[in-house]
Length: 126
Image 1 (cartoon, helix red, strand yellow):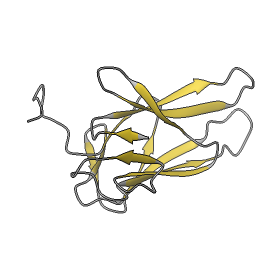
Image 2 (cartoon, helix red, strand yellow):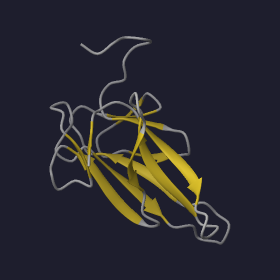
Image 3 (cartoon, helix red, strand yellow):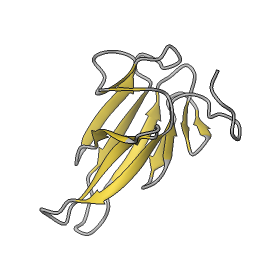
């Protein structure tokens, strides 16, 4: 699946067949699309390489830009923990805050994950 470096939202939803919460990454373009459903446990990679789970064909995106990891809930009724780890040269941003290379940040429902420096208020890409 392909994406561009515009913001990606981390969205939680209820799965109708069970009471288990399921998450997804949604590209925030003119027409939002689900990029990937998050695993119940495990990780997925986002980057420019074809071997990544979510491929972003943009020169500003690193080969393996970041890894989103899901840790299953420890107790019934608890939410799973979702973290992103930056592995890029140019930075990974959570709600416009840059993660340092190797740094992990917690993702919550509605958070914005951006693969390039966020645009300043209302700036249009060149």
